[in-house]
Every structure is written in structure tokens, then in C-alpha cells.
Amino acid sequence: MIRFGAKSAPAIGNERETQACDYLQRQGLKLLQRNYRARRGEIDLVMRDGDCLVFVEVRYRKSKAFGSPAETVTRNKQLRLVSAARQYLQQHPSRLDCRFDILGIEADGDIQWLKNAFDAA
Image (cartoon, rainbow, N blue to C red; front, side, top):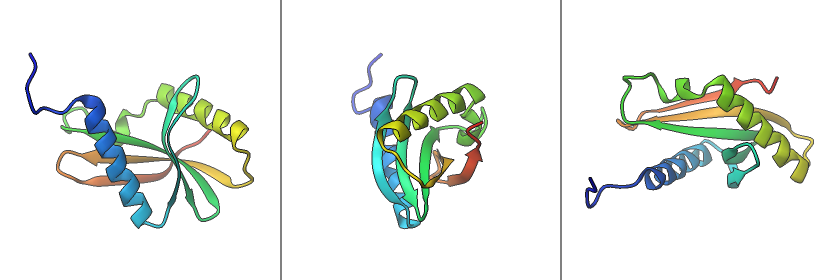
């Protein structure tokens, strides 16, 4: 059933990525690239935080019934993000330290920012 006026999942995802990017920029991070696509995955936001290159995964959930947005980043998803980050670094060499952050947005507008949420190992 099609509901007129309802937003598609990609449209909602795009809005949440914009919301996340705006939030992180207000925290002092600088956007380098959005939606970096690699063979094995995609990085929502590539940002710089001082002397650190930050790969950000943005997660949104309408309900807390299945856990927080950050809890939905499985080990398999982490491996895909690491693979994409490695490809990014091959194309954009950097001497900066790197980290993986997760920014979770909940339906009520709460934002949870997990810095250095997981390791590349």
C-alpha cells in the first residue's frame, strides 16, 4: 500500500545524515566527504576532528524495541566499514590518526555520539 506524503527510507536516511552532519559540524568537526561508496560498503560521513580522520556511521531508529541505533552496528557491518575506510585511505592518503564513530538518532530526536566506537582490527 502506498501512502501519499509518506517519506521513503532513502529520503529519511538522507535527512538523518544531514542532521548528523550538522550536529557534528556544530561540535567542531569538518566534513570531508559524504556517502563515500566502496566495493564492500559505504561510509556515511568522512570528517576531520582536529588531527583525526573520522569515519562516521549514522543510524536512525523509530523505536527502541530492538535496541539503540548504535547497537545495530554489527561486527559484519564494522568489517564493511573498515574495508571501505581502507579503500578511502588508498585514494586519499593521510598521516592522520583514524577512528570510527557511530552517531545514533532516535525518533524523539535524541542523539547518541559514540566516539571511537570500535577498532579496525
